[in-house]
Length: 287
Ligand SMILES: Nc1nc2c(ncn2[C@@H]2O[C@H](COP(=O)(O)OP(=O)(O)OP(=O)(O)O)[C@@H](O)[C@H]2O)c(=O)[nH]1
Ligand SMILES: [Mg+2]
Image (cartoon, rainbow, N blue to C red; front, side, top):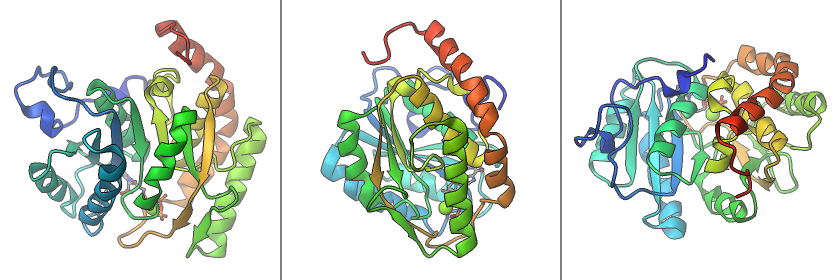
């Protein structure tokens, strides 16, 4: 992605941002902020959105009552997902919506969501798909593990983890892609393409987010690799990843293969990116 794209101005700002705050994309200062921002990117998830928000809320209210927000980042889904998100946000204080003008990929949706969450006072963000492949019942395990880590991965490939309902080809692509990325990058993360993650703010600030490649699996690998390179503690907790419950996949063979193709570039560029972030903010990473 191009530098600065993460800060691209959304068509409409999040609910909290529309209450008379300055027109700079930030949220109202003085607003009570939540440390945990569960970020859910959506494109045509009308059949899933209400249920996933309810399921996530049930978990978060138990373990982080009052201290969380659920941020839906919708790319102008033609199926009306954005309007559903708006009505959820209108009826609840714990839901925010970031509307973006057009489908621009999952990575860029996350980057925009992270920028908003950080501006709003987030201490950590959680990445989660809207389609129930990432079961919200694992949220407590992710948040439990973050006490002793800076980045927690919901991992398919540690003992207790796995995939359900996937065909052989998809299993091979996922497993092979992960093993290949590990080998090229030379790091010991079992599930480097995983997209169910909890990430501390200090990690996001130390990995030069604007230069993270934002297409599909590349995004996931690059965020995790830069975090490892920067010296952060990464933990993997087991999840069973189910095929999407409903709706259509946006994943393509091109996106998966591209991630593999780009693994050497991820490795090449990471040291400079981490150094850039450190130069911009020289505070020690584990402070
Ligand atoms: N905002 C936004 N969200 C997206 C975009 N592409 C995918 N998503 C969302 O990102 C999440 C993951 O996308 P999926 O299509 O499920 O991709 P996947 O999980 O890798 O593939 P499947 O297992 O086939 O579902 C879902 O919540 C999607 O709605 C996009 O361009 N913009
Ligand atoms: Mg999915």
